[in-house]
Image (cartoon, rainbow, N blue to C red):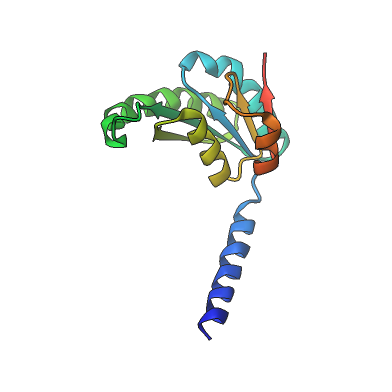
Amino acid sequence: MVKNKRKSVIKAVQKESSQLKNVYTVLVPIQDPEQFSLLLPPAIDLATKNHGKVILLNVVEIPYQLPPSSAKKFITERELMLEQGLKMLELADCSGSTAVRIAHNMNGAIKRFAKEENVDTVIKDFDLGYQPETLFCQLKSRIVNWF
């Protein structure tokens, strides 16, 4: 009896999550405000063409010796930086949001965030430290290198 309840709950959660994943999502990891002019145009273009949204992500990377709480003082500063990009998205009439994460490994944090958010495309201008086809297989997405 308990197993049947679990199965029905799992099915309900899966159905709900698949209904939520109707929006095409473009992830743009941003470490520097100068990247906005380079990375946002293709992100806006993809999101607009696919009736989707753009997520601007900043990762505060800290040494392994420090606890994540040591980086909390940087969050407000990073959120303010991402607000600049959000204003650019609004001017382009593109739906968007921002996120700041604290991690010991920036590449791993971006990869985890992309998986959690069911990202369709990642637009970046730096090496994530793993092969694009690996990310492609795991996220069913594309990575766009924009030059």
